[in-house]
Image 1 (spheres, rainbow, N blue to C red):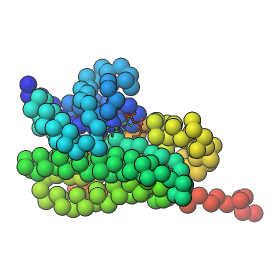
Image 2: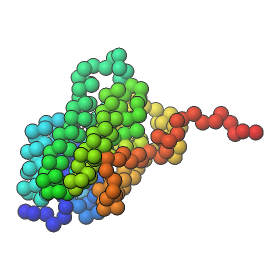
Image 3: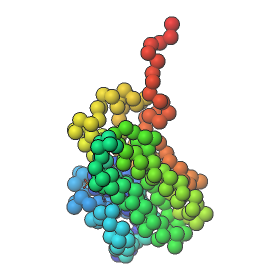
Length: 253
Ligand code: NDP
């Protein structure tokens, strides 16, 4: 069966921000395939008809196999959103090697595997759009070394792929969300390693992001409105990155 709608693949698309990105892209008219290691679409009702395929992005051979299957069954992959990500909170001196590699495997190697597999297919057709999900943590965040490092690396990979493929019809950009009340953030709050009050005091907008606001940024970057954007990272963070976090102690006299 060949789909009428362009196909968008969202990694980690069965939950959290990935689920909301899928909802938005489906509303934009794309046929969305959530690829996730979660063995079902558990995030909620599915009126948008989002497809699901099982995939662990750390298995690069499986990435290629699953992308081939999607293209044979549903049509060419027009859009890839590299959203799957995990975190581990621990200071560098105490971090176990397998905590480091687990995060690097998903957040960097997984992003590269999917970007390369989708990019090759898109380059052969001379068109495609890829959005990688980074984070405000990319600026450096104490207690989150593998997360911050991989999210910074995603910005570098995005810039490089954006430059390499700009003249060949494939646009690659990134979205760097601030704090969103979904898995990666919620796990930290529940474990007590993140304090909601401290985080809110640090965000100029004084609220968390709604996952739909991340979906809106992805929607823009994959649309023709962003036709001259290549290799950029768009921060969707309520002003987090533009304020270094030291407010005046009081109003001046
Ligand atoms: P969630 O944990 O809610 O969702 C992530 C999804 O990705 C889950 O379904 C998860 O499955 C899946 N996933 C994890 N590892 C793999 C893998 N190896 N292969 C395929 N799927 C996988 O996270 P969020 O929605 O909060 O985060 C989504 C993205 O946004 C991440 O890249 C995160 O770093 C980024 N981000 C999040 C922020 C936040 O505040 N929430 C802020 C900035 C960036 P499973 O449950 O099995 O792990």
